[in-house]
Image (cartoon, rainbow, N blue to C red; front, side, top):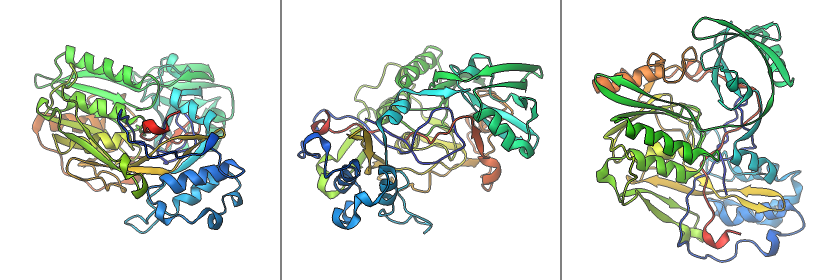
Length: 456
């Protein structure tokens, strides 16, 4: 089963309620007993069962009131109930709220859309470079706008005749989100004007938005824009990318996770196995911890004893990351740090070192935060995010893989010189400017499979 983090943004083209997970499968999981009674129903409503699951699996279950005191049926929906459950987690270090922003419940039908990567819409994200300069941040290749050849960096001049500007943002948003079709006027990266009449349609999102090889001082640097660990083709696309890099003798890698909200942890693990030095084979990758009742589920995850044939045997790696990099993305960065030189360019990550299981109950998925993961150095408390080594703007004016795109340019400079430019102060308003999307979406987190005893 599966899930994702709770950082709402102005819609990307793949939608859901909200949650992040962490996950992986183990063949010899202990059998802790039956979590749910017959048919997964406790009491008379789905709300009773959703709360019962929380009282079992919630990482901070000792803080939850007894059902009689919590009164599950006093909440209008399972979603509202789980929002309240989150408030029983500890306060964050800044004292501004609870660390749990993710425990969730959502209809199975909605969650299935996330798992398959199914979406409906134009299929792109947009962001302002300036008040009168709106750009395509990215476009899914399989979407209507992607199939029309639109690329990141293209300037949106007009939508249905409306000048694209912050002053007209409400009208622009309505033209994009509120209609089934629209006419776009673009200025391409090459300076051409293109007018496209587009209609929304169903499409499948994908993980790899760009893969390429850049020559830097005689070295071959692989660039991988990996946008999700959750869509159905995530593993296949990852395997194909590393086979491509291996076949072309890539010796350095820039992994771009700036919009990657997470997904399956076993894909994150696979990514890690592709990049670590051969000397890391069989060593500790991470450990996970559950609440006291389910500590028998705790486990140790090691790197593969025999690394994949397409392992790049890297000594260092540069990640392009941002506040949208979450869960399985953060897990990947964190587990590599004890074993190789890891740098982050862009912005601090989101901050989700915990995950959950997806429990089906009466047409819903119930997922209280249930597991925390730490790397081989014992570190896992990055609730405020993993800190960037170099803050840099998200340069919407250039396509992914362009060596002059601001974040990639800094990454390549480090690989060339071995030094990171001075760590300038974070400027949230310009580093990760608000990204608008044509469909509402939260973002998927890391996903953990149920232990064998609970799989149905």
